[in-house]
Structure formats: structure tokens, C-alpha cells
Image (tube, rainbow, N blue to C red):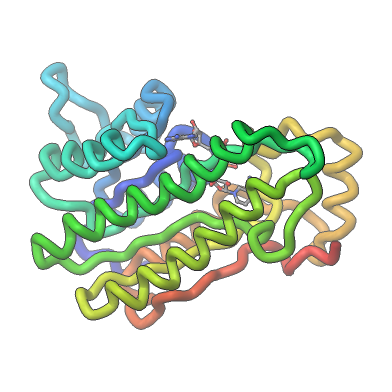
Length: 257
Ligand code: NAD
């Protein structure tokens, strides 16, 4: 049993894959969960699955509530923090930024739009949510744990993913710097670097590529969303109270490209 206290956890990208598994794991640990996704219906489905709902006036019923927001839009990201704080009467003490996208193309052919879109969601989105969450925590004098989902691709690169790799490398640097700045406020910041995890994001990869990836994973199999959620839960809990600025790999060991 992890030590959680009375955590309120905001999870972005909560409507699918890793984000949904994180919501389920944190709820099991006793946290109240604010599940946010660009797809509001998917976020609501997550809340339904973990045992919460909204009453007709929109107020959270039970411990959990769903929110719709595009984290790459400054106004929406800041509004999200305000909405969560208003709904639960306190700022979230655990913030997990899991929203992410891919738009793969070889460097030689990548459009500016594909570059911008991935950087906007994966990197700027995390900046906006981390900043708004930290501001809410500092101004209310609360401690917190911020966990940003990066990727092992941010360290080792991947063919067809210059935009994605750059965004994920950026998340590591952003999170380490935030940890240095926010430590004195009692706010820990860590990033988690999953390897290849079976989710809707990776489902669309051609089978041949999937098989090649499997052969390169020393543990011999892909990870599950729950493998990532377990590590996030530890970083969210008081059991990791002296861990900050870390980037934790959840990869079945780094891929030997
Ligand atoms: P997924 O596609 O299953 O889920 C991503 C979720 O993010 C979706 O529900 C989507 O609607 C939401 N989202 C997208 N853009 C958004 C926006 N602008 N605002 C709010 N929500 C938005 O993907 P996943 O595999 O569960 O990935 C989750 C995170 O983990 C991503 O950041 C991804 O880059 C990272 N990651 C995944 C893997 C993997 O192998 N699946 C590996 C390393 C890192």
C-alpha cells in the first residue's frame, strides 16, 4: 500500500491508454481523480470506469470528475486548473501530464505543421499545465507532485519522429528545471519515459515494425499501460518524497537501436 494522504490528482490524456490506466491506479490508491482529455466523452468514460460521475449541474459526485480541454491552448490549460480547483475546492496535489500525439514523417519530408502540432501538444501543453498547476500550488501554499510523461524516444530518437523525439527530450529538460525551481515550495517534478507500450497510439504501427521492436526489447515483450501507471503511482505518493528531477525509464530496458 502506497502512502497517498488525501491526494487530488489531475491527469491529462485521461481518455485513453496510459492516461486511463493512471486514473484507475490512482483512484485505487484512494486519490480523487480529475480526468481531462481533448475528447470529453472519453474522459467521462474513464470516470465512469473508475467509479465516479457528475451530477446534472456539473458538480463532481463521488470522488472523480471529467474535464474537456485542449492542453496546447493557453487559455484552455489555465482554465482547466481553475475548473478543477473550483470543482474540488482545492488545487490538485498530483498532476500527471499524459496527453500526447504523434505525426510521423521522415525529416526530409516533414511539414512545418506536423512539427508545430506535435511540439504544441507534447511540449507546450506540458509547459502550460505544469506552470498553471505550480502557480495554483504555490499561491495556496500546498505541496505537490508533478509527473510529466516523456518517452525513451526523447533519449534515443526514432526514425520518422524528429518532432516527437524533440518534444519528449524537451519534456525531460523542462521537468528537471521545474524541479530545481519548485523544490523549495515542496513541489516535486519527475518525468517518466515509457518504452513501447500497447495502447491505441501504438496499435496503428505496421505488424512488421511491431515485431522488429519486440525483438529489440531485452525483456522480450511490450509494456502495458499498467506498467507505467505503477511507476506514476509511486512518484505521486509520499513514498517517493525525496525523489525529484528524476527521469524514470519504463522500457523493459533501453532499446538497442
Ligand atoms: P493514446 O493515444 O492512447 O492517448 C493519448 C490521449 O491524449 C488521447 O485520449 C487523446 O485524446 C489525448 N490528447 C491528445 N491531444 C490532446 C490535447 N491537445 N489536449 C488534451 N488531451 C489530448 O496514447 P498513449 O499511448 O496512452 O500515450 C500517452 C502518453 O504516453 C503520450 O504522451 C505518449 O507520447 C506517451 N508515450 C506513449 C508510449 C507508447 O508506447 N504508447 C511510449 C512512450 C510515451
